[in-house]
Image 1: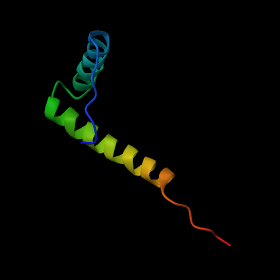
Image 2: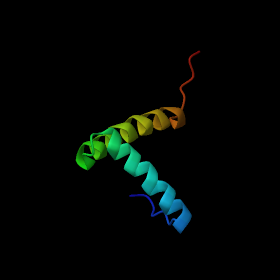
Image 3: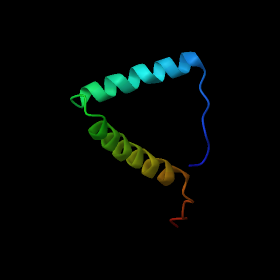
Image 4: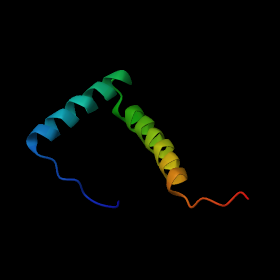
Length: 59
């Protein structure tokens, strides 16, 4: 883990509402929702890594 994020109570409530909705979309199965989130984060990280990778000259 790179760093720990600290949330205030308003941010925490908003995050909980989003998490509850995400879990509900996965038939109220938190493990299934967590697996989906891990996969989604992996895809996003791959895209970020590709954007920040050094570019080679193509001449």
